[in-house]
Image 1 (tube, rainbow, N blue to C red):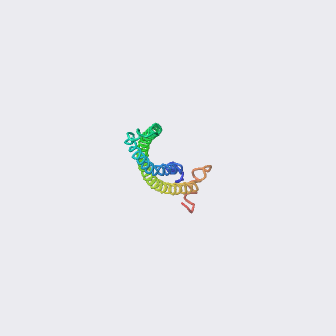
Image 2: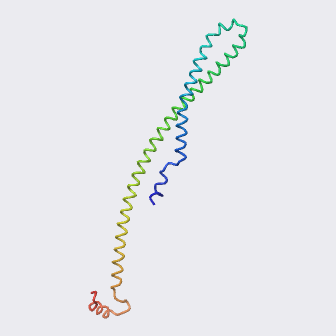
Image 3: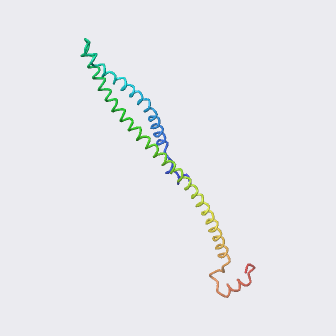
Length: 163
């Protein structure tokens, strides 16, 4: 009975697996951010090389490569910003879930204690009802037969061994 009452408060395995998966994903964000920052830093130095590259024969090809790398760097910077926002959001959600889990654990403990007290009260009530039932049966057995007259009932009452 107790397990049935507490079942809705238990966290499903699927939620725990999802939380672990989110935590693993959050751990992978740091190295990605480091790689993106390194790529951004390396490509920023390329913009200073443009005046030098204008003097070479391969300037158009190099400029298109530099331009493409520059666009990709901007996209990576936007991606990094998005990933950082997701990381912060994930941290906040994990903190919120942690608080919720602690709260549910407290509620579970309180409910367990309360159900224990209720079971004790039910046992006491059962014992009382059983005692009253026994008393009623004893009184019913001692009552005279309703089909006999009042004088016979009185005589039986005064002459019986139980009276």
